[in-house]
Length: 125
View 1 (cartoon, rainbow, N blue to C red):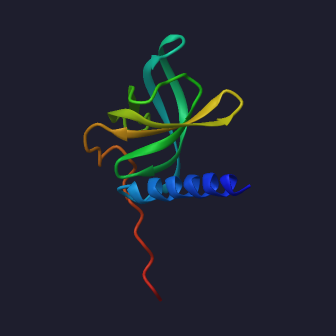
View 2: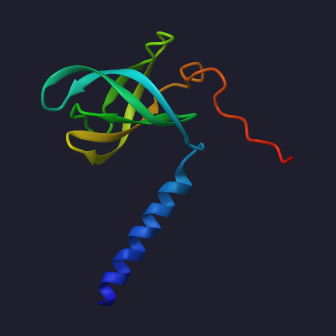
Protein backbone atom coordinates (compact mmCIF):
# COMPACT_ATOMS: atom_id res chain seq x y z
CA UNK A 1 0.00 0.00 0.00
CA UNK A 2 2.88 2.37 0.76
CA UNK A 3 4.08 2.03 -2.86
CA UNK A 4 0.78 3.52 -4.08
CA UNK A 5 1.29 6.60 -1.90
CA UNK A 6 4.81 7.07 -3.25
CA UNK A 7 3.52 6.86 -6.83
CA UNK A 8 0.73 9.37 -6.12
CA UNK A 9 3.22 11.75 -4.48
CA UNK A 10 5.57 11.45 -7.45
CA UNK A 11 2.68 12.18 -9.86
CA UNK A 12 1.69 15.28 -7.85
CA UNK A 13 5.32 16.47 -7.81
CA UNK A 14 5.46 16.17 -11.63
CA UNK A 15 2.21 18.15 -11.97
CA UNK A 16 3.49 20.90 -9.67
CA UNK A 17 6.81 20.97 -11.53
CA UNK A 18 4.93 21.30 -14.84
CA UNK A 19 2.81 24.17 -13.51
CA UNK A 20 5.88 25.97 -12.19
CA UNK A 21 7.63 25.62 -15.55
CA UNK A 22 4.90 27.57 -17.35
CA UNK A 23 6.48 30.84 -18.53
CA UNK A 24 3.31 32.91 -18.62
CA UNK A 25 -0.17 32.81 -17.11
CA UNK A 26 -2.98 31.10 -19.04
CA UNK A 27 -6.24 32.89 -19.76
CA UNK A 28 -9.47 31.22 -20.91
CA UNK A 29 -10.42 32.49 -24.35
CA UNK A 30 -12.80 31.01 -26.92
CA UNK A 31 -11.48 31.93 -30.36
CA UNK A 32 -11.95 29.98 -33.56
CA UNK A 33 -8.71 29.25 -35.41
CA UNK A 34 -7.67 27.25 -38.45
CA UNK A 35 -4.89 24.73 -37.79
CA UNK A 36 -2.86 23.29 -40.67
CA UNK A 37 -0.28 20.56 -40.48
CA UNK A 38 0.62 16.97 -41.25
CA UNK A 39 -1.51 14.32 -39.53
CA UNK A 40 0.41 11.29 -38.29
CA UNK A 41 -2.41 9.08 -39.64
CA UNK A 42 -3.98 10.80 -42.66
CA UNK A 43 -1.41 13.17 -44.19
CA UNK A 44 -1.96 16.93 -44.59
CA UNK A 45 -4.88 18.43 -42.68
CA UNK A 46 -6.66 21.74 -42.29
CA UNK A 47 -9.05 21.93 -39.35
CA UNK A 48 -11.17 24.71 -37.90
CA UNK A 49 -11.22 24.42 -34.12
CA UNK A 50 -11.57 26.36 -30.89
CA UNK A 51 -8.84 27.67 -28.63
CA UNK A 52 -9.51 26.67 -24.99
CA UNK A 53 -6.96 29.01 -23.39
CA UNK A 54 -4.05 31.24 -24.37
CA UNK A 55 -0.84 32.61 -22.92
CA UNK A 56 2.00 34.74 -24.23
CA UNK A 57 3.85 31.72 -25.58
CA UNK A 58 1.08 29.63 -27.13
CA UNK A 59 -2.32 28.05 -26.62
CA UNK A 60 -4.34 25.02 -25.63
CA UNK A 61 -6.76 23.85 -28.32
CA UNK A 62 -9.04 20.94 -29.17
CA UNK A 63 -8.00 19.01 -32.27
CA UNK A 64 -9.36 15.91 -33.99
CA UNK A 65 -6.35 15.46 -36.31
CA UNK A 66 -3.61 13.14 -35.06
CA UNK A 67 -0.45 15.10 -34.25
CA UNK A 68 2.78 14.20 -32.47
CA UNK A 69 4.88 15.89 -29.81
CA UNK A 70 7.36 18.30 -31.36
CA UNK A 71 5.43 18.52 -34.62
CA UNK A 72 5.04 21.95 -36.22
CA UNK A 73 1.60 23.30 -37.14
CA UNK A 74 0.39 26.64 -38.46
CA UNK A 75 -2.38 28.55 -36.69
CA UNK A 76 -4.44 31.09 -38.61
CA UNK A 77 -6.85 33.53 -36.98
CA UNK A 78 -9.75 33.82 -39.50
CA UNK A 79 -10.83 37.18 -38.03
CA UNK A 80 -7.48 38.90 -38.65
CA UNK A 81 -5.83 36.53 -41.19
CA UNK A 82 -2.77 36.50 -38.91
CA UNK A 83 -0.74 33.29 -39.10
CA UNK A 84 1.88 31.88 -36.77
CA UNK A 85 3.88 28.69 -36.60
CA UNK A 86 3.75 26.61 -33.41
CA UNK A 87 5.20 23.38 -32.06
CA UNK A 88 3.08 20.71 -30.32
CA UNK A 89 4.31 20.63 -26.71
CA UNK A 90 1.71 18.47 -24.94
CA UNK A 91 -1.13 16.07 -25.78
CA UNK A 92 -3.99 14.85 -23.58
CA UNK A 93 -7.18 12.92 -24.31
CA UNK A 94 -10.21 15.20 -24.26
CA UNK A 95 -13.37 13.31 -25.31
CA UNK A 96 -14.59 11.27 -28.28
CA UNK A 97 -12.10 11.81 -31.11
CA UNK A 98 -10.79 15.12 -29.68
CA UNK A 99 -7.35 15.70 -28.17
CA UNK A 100 -6.29 18.66 -26.03
CA UNK A 101 -3.19 19.95 -27.81
CA UNK A 102 -0.86 22.48 -26.20
CA UNK A 103 1.19 24.44 -28.73
CA UNK A 104 4.10 26.79 -28.23
CA UNK A 105 4.85 29.55 -30.76
CA UNK A 106 8.16 29.07 -32.59
CA UNK A 107 8.58 32.89 -32.72
CA UNK A 108 7.04 35.65 -30.55
CA UNK A 109 3.50 36.25 -31.82
CA UNK A 110 2.12 39.10 -29.73
CA UNK A 111 -0.11 40.32 -32.60
CA UNK A 112 -1.79 36.93 -33.10
CA UNK A 113 -4.30 37.21 -30.25
CA UNK A 114 -7.14 39.75 -30.11
CA UNK A 115 -6.35 43.31 -29.05
CA UNK A 116 -6.25 43.66 -25.30
CA UNK A 117 -4.26 40.48 -24.54
CA UNK A 118 -3.23 39.81 -21.90
CA UNK A 119 -6.25 40.91 -19.84
CA UNK A 120 -5.45 43.63 -17.36
CA UNK A 121 -5.62 42.63 -13.73
CA UNK A 122 -8.37 44.42 -11.88
CA UNK A 123 -7.09 46.98 -9.42
CA UNK A 124 -8.29 46.89 -5.83
CA UNK A 125 -11.24 49.20 -5.20
